[in-house]
Length: 502
View (cartoon, rainbow, N blue to C red):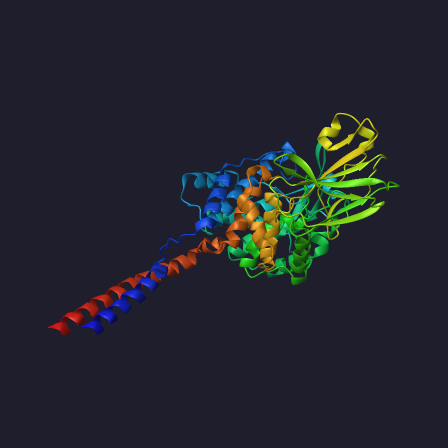
């Protein structure tokens, strides 16, 4: 009898292990802390509006384009993080996307920012319906839309009709505040092609030629280096406080979908961007560099906030015109400040905090000697009645982020995930995202990108990938066979036990 009970227990154990995944049931897993932060970002993603002061362009002219882009991004981030696809607020986002489809099957253009021209970040804007249409297809598929739906079929026909020699393009505009937008030309676009290739591949089209065109151009030179020497973009990677994006930022999302279609970025490019990201993350040690023209008699004081206010904890004197002070700043609730005191004008050169060859904010304010007055309080620079010049440099908080910004940190984490990077300081970056507040998001799409990054590293992204229609049907057919088979086995076991007992 004992042997029979053991056999029966083993049968039930095997069935309980196999039956739920076969039948497609959802097994509730307690994700603990990770789930808590994903849930938090889901709510922030749902509620975050388009804001021209934090958008890609910073121009209200592109509000409709960027609002549509944000809606698609929300759908993808929410769906892949496990948010209920049948909820009313999620379905409202889907209806918003579908309402924006044109008669030709296209969806609104989105900004691509990958036009290769000197100083293009200041003078040109690129808008692409192909990129917007590809993004819309991906969002609808993530929402559970069938590839055979009329919206996706019309959008697919638009992409195929508007392909140009194995790639897709963006319309390049020159924008002036007084005269508005003026179209200049049509330019091949890495971002538009990436979205189009990912979308078409997902609905079953052969895009091998188009992928080869794109892959050949996914190089460090095209994605990063045109911007690296620019005064405004050479400080940090990703770059803070700007109204443009380098191509490596704009192409990050479609590259995730391309990888799922077995199309990966060249290893050389992944290694280059990974190394640059590791160099510029706010972790480890930083160096305070001071460079003055002729000033040698000054003092540097490191000050830390205590219960008694700001107190000097360390002092350096007589450091010369060019000085490097190596610092392990750590993470402080209140941070540190470095005061530079001199009787002569400090006229800075390359002063500021550096990590490797990259400058970290903050830096000694420029040309401050020309602006003696009340503005110094806000700039952290003062001139006293005794003739002393007094500058304050806020130390960068080495909090594991990039740029102390949710968006920048999320984009960096996505690239490191694409490169297969593990360990290292990734946990520090994830912790920054988990603890960051909306105030630490300088971009209107920071919340959904952070949700995507947390989903990737929490292994939720793959789990919530929508099942293709053909696979769903295969699973249903399998269920039709498995259920009677399992029931038959159980009935046979019980009948056998009863007969043996008799």
